[in-house]
Image (cartoon, helix red, strand yellow):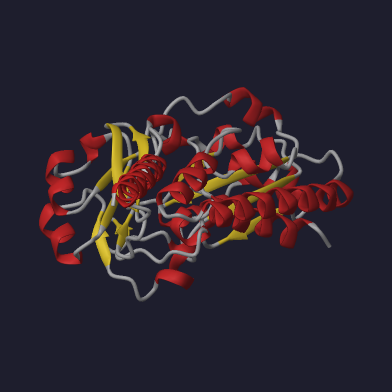
Length: 321
């Protein structure tokens, strides 16, 4: 009897010991299951820095609104729920993909935003251009505000949108493919025109705007493809603001470019003005038949991956024979 009692005590001691070990292991596993600092518990959410500080946004959102930055969304294979517009004016170079997408006015009226029922809103850093405040948009849907640096740099937008949308692989591929396109076009253009100079003029009504070296897609022409600037473009220097300054036909007579891309809608008055101008007709490009008319200026007057690709296509198609 006495020995049975000792055996039972010994047996229960072992069982209790095992239970304590199992319990400790369970606690350790629970601790390891906790996410490390800076990670997100919910894989459908992502936490990122923004112009409004650190924000947590849904990475699984499908109804996305990023006014004026639809270029970046499309580059990542995402169709927005609405597209930027000023009245009937849209970004024409994107219409192949966006023709069936409804418009939203450029200043984002709150009622229009509500009507599109977005799941995620992505805005530029300058909120002054919008009708509503960050807090008002954020009540409608989680809202990410880009930093000034990201707003100004489409490459950073590709990277940032890739993180927001869980499309980092697609973002890396889009940027890699673009760099390959630039390298190929640069080689073709060098062989085709050598050191000849190129300029771009935008005609609106009867006003003319000569692109500075870093104005919109001219940045692609001069700084990525390495095409040469004529003296008048060098004289203009960098674009100091978003404000365009028109240039007179008399001043354009000083444009000694070998090739000029004239961006003007069909029937634009400026086309006739130049055709009838003796001083313009005396410029090297006009005399040699190298004024290349393009009726869609929308990609040239924007910055974005798709805008840049289309500008490269315009240059290669026109200059590489």
